[in-house]
Amino acid sequence: MRHRVSGRHLGRDTAHRTALYRNLVTDLLRYERITTTQAKAKEIRPMAEKIITLGRRGDLHARRLAARFVYDPKVVKKVFDEIGPRMKERPGGYLRITSLEARKGDGAAMASIELVDFVDAPPTPRPQRMTASPSAANLAPAPLAPAPAVEPAAEEEAPTDVMDRMVDAREDVAEVPETGGTEEPPAPPAAEVTPDSEASAEAAMERENQAAEAADEAAAEAQAKPANQGMDQESQSDRS
Image 1: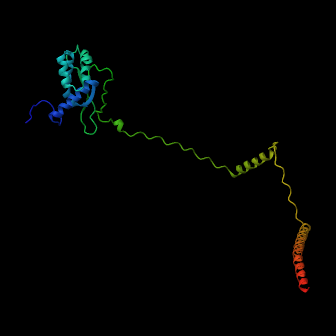
Image 2: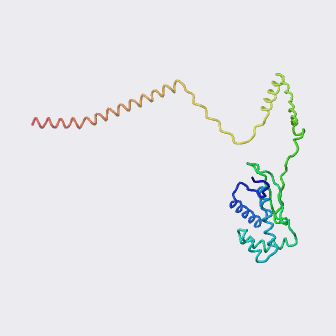
Image 3: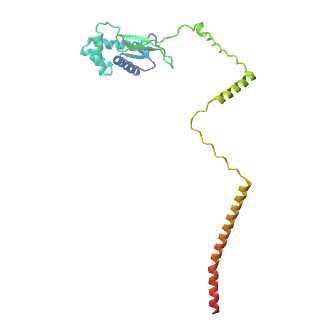
């Protein structure tokens, strides 16, 4: 039975838990502020404060004891050269734990642990939590916006007014003076077709056709004459 046994197991065995504490203390002394769960922050707080007390002593034995727990030799040097002299006049209470909002996912309680004289960065902002139920004003429905006013439709114009406007517009167009500018030349009038012109055109077409036929006949006769001469010469030779 584990009754009234100090310390937290954190779901780890002894070797794993000790390595976790040493890592957290080393990072805390290196960065002077880390964010972790509240349970881990409360566990490493006395361990880190003992290392800072060794840094205040400053002797060789204290340095070897700190190097036995802290992983990084550079962090040990920082504790004895910077943090220890800063805490020389402070008898304990070197660290501050600030609760933060629960971690999303598993809902674990988170906290920020830092040195009390850590001034290189702004303080850890505390979350704004809603402790009271929403007020009735927040639950009240928002007032509806007034509907836009609809303008009355304009009365339809009488037919007589429309006719009067059309007559006025025509008069205005008739009174507009002609503007000087480049005007297109009028198109030439189309030639009038008369019966005499049609008869003359048909006679010209007939004359052209007759001339073409005469030319074709002359060409045919010219081609036929050499052939007839050759045949006459052959017949004469046969007779002789």
